[in-house]
Image (cartoon, rainbow, N blue to C red; front, side, top):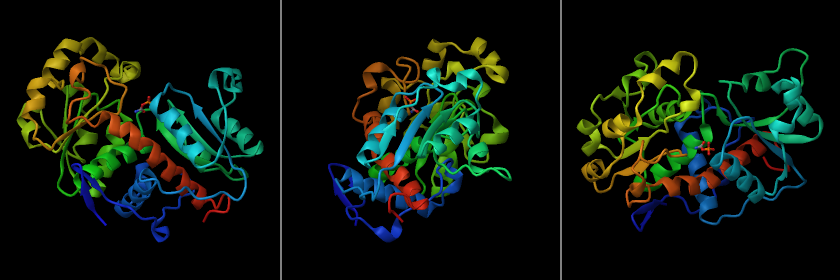
Length: 336
Ligand code: CP
């Protein structure tokens, strides 16, 4: 049942066992249908409303393997795992045998041999997960893998928390005008979100410097807007992206010379003038971390139209639902 409370739509108040998602691994939004997303969001909402997590019939060991820096994703996965009653085994890449040259497959084979059944991985290599989920002949690695971000490829847990934030606000996706702004080519958030927003029926727009827009890839999912101000008054959601200087190498290296933070802020940054142009019920999102004063003027990060803190809060509950989906998909701890 849908109820409206303090301008937020509370969509799900009951636990519906028959709608539970079951997946052997959770690595990309490409795995998900629109119904899958809605069921996951319902489940996350159930947990957010205080619904009980399922009881495990035996201890389940998991580990979080972050080969790239993280604050939100790493911490909220750990909170989610502890809420689910998993036993979290620490893993520190800087003191691991990866530094002796061990590859990711062999590291995961080691983890599985030690009894770890769920691993959450963030890794700089796009689609690193294929090595683990598509074992070659003679290889028997079994791991409930959850992707916490691969290079510029996918960021499914960010996408799910973004979808929860939008759904909580509007109660649907159909026809919502959503603009993704900024460093598009480096962004796994942009890629996951443009794909899933298309699946869910939203209208996607892109803006930002043209050197970070690849028409061949992005035009399949939305419309590029050169002057952000032309579209701002029509938007339901303004989704800002972080400028990811650390990814500007290889083909992107030349963009570091073209980029100027002050010019970027003037052309694409969320300032008071643009804030006032947004509809009263429009919302502003950012995956974090924020370059304050570049993508978003610092004094507006917690303004009424901002959902930045709500996104991070929702992240815990979608991650509980995502890990639960893998526990059920692999029939671990008595869950089915
Ligand atoms: N949004 C996001 O992935 O943030 P972290 O890098 O801090 O996890």
